[in-house]
Length: 253
Image (cartoon, rainbow, N blue to C red; front, side, top):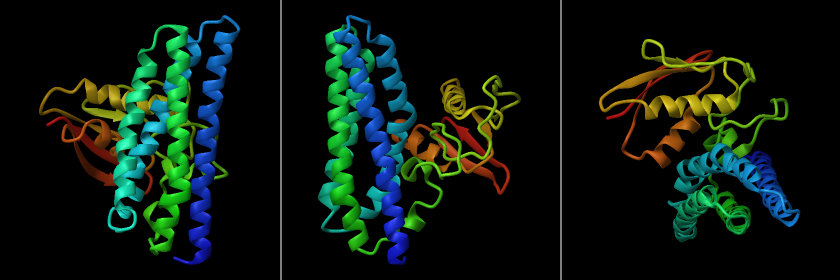
């Protein structure tokens, strides 16, 4: 990997981190201001929880399977990665506490905790983990090829959130999809709906059953989220791998 490529990739990661951190902080401040103005913070809390579910949790899962896994092989970074992986668990628990918070005080406190945890975590990734990988000569560009959950959306991409990666077509907000004949085709859905429908289809599976996901790009980052949330509880088999259509058989053992 050339120095320019390494520098560009690391900068893309840091830019994505900045956007995530800024959005997280904005949500936390908005929640606190709502309470200061004697407004209910519940709707704003729900927006932050949705942001965490659609962006933060998939981002963390993708990091564990790529950057963290590569860093575990580096003696100087192994302990750091173990600690940061544990922080992901703490962060997910804090998000759950925010989701379950009921009183205005509980919501403000839980939102502040999630924000503080995430900002500190990003700082470690930017200032410790990424330099360790670069100094060890890890080919980060190849490692993260197409990983929009970590690199962020390409400049020409539409402004949307998705746990599955980039899309050329943002989808139809009025479209619907459901499992039909064992097939779930999400290509017409907007990104947030894809995430919802895929996990809803999985939750509806009985033991030993499966459905075939049809998508317009490789849903590899989605697999990382399945691994984080349903470790040992799902199967994933590629039936077709592009370049226009991807078909994946997702099952419940």
